[in-house]
Amino acid sequence: MIQLFVIQTLMTGGVYALLAVGFSLIFGVARMINLAHTAFFMLAAYGMFFCSYQLGLDPISSIILSLVVTTGVGVLSYKLFIDRIREHHAIVLLITIALAMVFQELMLLAFGAHFREAPTLISGFMIVLGVRITYQQILSLGIVLVALLCVWALLTKTKLGIAIRATAQDTEIANLMGINVSRILLMTMGIATALAAVSGVVVAPLWVVYPYMWISPLVMIMAIVVLGGLGSIRGSFIGAFIIALVETSVVLLMPMGAFLKGAFALLAMVIILVVRPEGLFGVVFEEERL
Image (cartoon, rainbow, N blue to C red; front, side):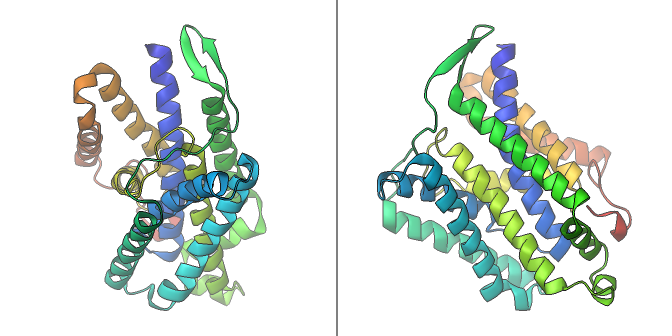
């Protein structure tokens, strides 16, 4: 039981962390709440399914093509619909939720409402302390960890990361320092979309793929971001595993009440916010973002 608990928490927490870090990144840099964020997660999952079964590509090629296309769609959507009005927050909310609904309806038209499943990259399983773990689960967890490490390295060890953090702190000062703010915002959107796409291809072989699969993660990701502190990458990472821990506990301890896992996760968020309204790593000053 304990071993299964740990595995499920790590898998769910890793996927949530990828999504939440991307969501926080675009919020921290562009001050934009992107409600279409998890829709790209859905698009990537469908992309892997389509490339594998409709185009007949091998799993690796399907993953690469799905990641590239999904990231391109995210960047293009930002450039066409959001870039010029990103400071009008209410309009951005409406446009991003509209984009998510458009993507959902397109998937419904193309694939119907049936549950789909993408092929696994690696078959087989191993027994660890009496718990059956598939090689696909191990691979997916490894991909998540590598992606998170790459984001950390990008933000802390590269010139692009310095530019992103400078833009997050103060766009006007960053512009005066010679940083192309518009270009940085576009690249940040690309990175955030790529993280959502990675999470999509990671879960496609493990979860069912269907047009509404973006809705529940969106609620959880928003809860995680608020729990960790708006704009805090570290808070989003830790908050993701807290929410995953609560969800997994409910599923394993209350099998008949597994449908309540989301409610318990949100309750945990509320309890923490009552004690610490700014979130676990909420910022007091703008320069503390990221």
